[in-house]
Amino acid sequence: MRRFLIGPAGLACAAILACSGGKGGGGLVSPPPGPVATFQCDDSAAATDQVVLRCGAKVAADVWRIDVVIGVPTTSTDINGFVFDVVYDPLLLAYVPGSARAGTLLISDGGTQLFAAALEPGHPGDLVVGIQRPSADGGGVAGILGHDLIMSFQIRSRTAAPFGPEFVRFEKTMAVDSADAPIPGITFSDQLLLSLR
Image (cartoon, rainbow, N blue to C red; front, side):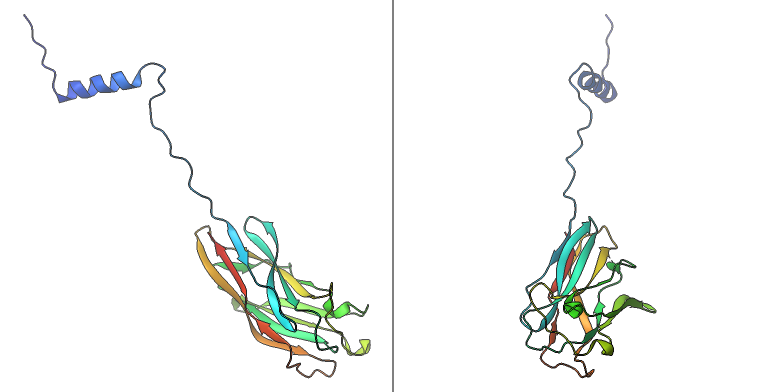
């Protein structure tokens, strides 16, 4: 009589053959994919005479259009221009070059406006903005319903890793009248948060 010794290696081979054969489908089961991070924007409404950053529209999965608006109707009827910086963390966010557009606030009476927006040289997280009516247009305007947009720009997420919420904020702010004097009643408020969650 012959004996067959089945050792641990023999048992392992038998188990593999028993589990892998047939149409049972065996093999590895992949887990379901995890949640996909979403680029989100949160803001608050503007109060009268308050300039704020607003979530405009999601342009792409990683890009938001940000609107700079003033709460209307304004108490000032002689708004002639604005200068401000929009500041953000350049490791997480980036200005989309060429995306800045002037709004309709300063041309609500059919006048013209001069507009410039560019990154501060050497500071990729600082968008410098200037928008003003030329003096030939005579006087400023009031912010009215339907004409509250000062300008807009696009900002994108630079990372696929979750972050935030991250403040996008104003610095070096000023609203001026037709005599180029500051308008003290117009204030700027940081209310916009971006996150990737």
